[in-house]
Image: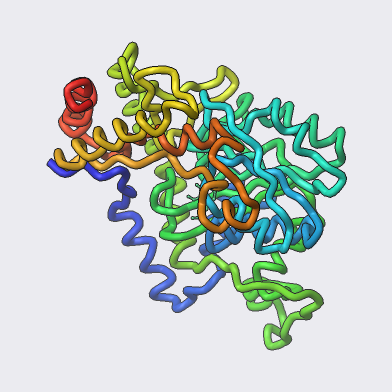
Length: 390
Ligand SMILES: Cc1ncc(COP(=O)(O)O)c(C=O)c1O
């Protein structure tokens, strides 16, 4: 039995949906993307969704729209996918890392304030693996320092914070539709913001800086007239092939989330009181989206002093699971320890100890909506006999 770490779910409906753009010939951003955006708004209740080619490009557009540039600092958690920090570098600004809190793996609220300087312009809290960052206090803190908040919700489609969909409190929220996320369009992303000004700017920036989209131009009179280009923009447009798949995936989302939560619950039960693996900790005001089921390998309280030894044990366990055809992964990486960042900013593991511990000791278990009972039992059987591997 071969168990992958994740697997997107597609059916006949996605195949059928793809036929429409193929038959009409409108395969670039057009009516299907517009429909996907509109349905995303309906599902999430988030305002003004703007589809992009990825969450990375969504985050990039967010920072451009906020005029983040050289000389500015942006706070980012030290444990996240590298894109969160890369978009800050792309703007010539400086990502300032903030350590995380090990229960949720999200930015440590109590470490944010000491990182704020006169150059800080924005914070990018990440709702990692489907658990929202503590947005309410982050927004309050940001307001008191006049900072903007861009929520990296790459993993948070379907996640809720205080009864609202993730992203509702931020100035701008960005989502991903990469195949390892709850729903996928191959690659793909979405920006949402309640600011009409920012919406117009981001819509234009994703489309070369054009004053109106191809769809608006084609639906109106005198479609031969080209738009104005009053700012430098990008081609970050999602295609209609992706939009068509997105529409169907959104219809599936309630079912997908139900399956993800059911499978996660079974892992929770199996890992309760486990000697080595700590299951995810979900704060009471969050509804986990289970983009990933990330455990912490901790046969003893992890510290910078014992982390190398524990990491060897964790990897031994992952080797054994791989030999049994069960795929596992670390949660994500400590960005301050990636070559580019550690060298450019002379960073050491102990500068952000919790991020480093999470980097070395997290272990993600396979989770996908179509995972069968026998598949999950096979994984659980191997996890519960974990002592014999160490
Ligand atoms: C936290 C986080 N931010 C950003 C991204 C980038 O998303 P995308 O692959 O859609 O560019 C990812 C992707 O895994 C992510 O996990």
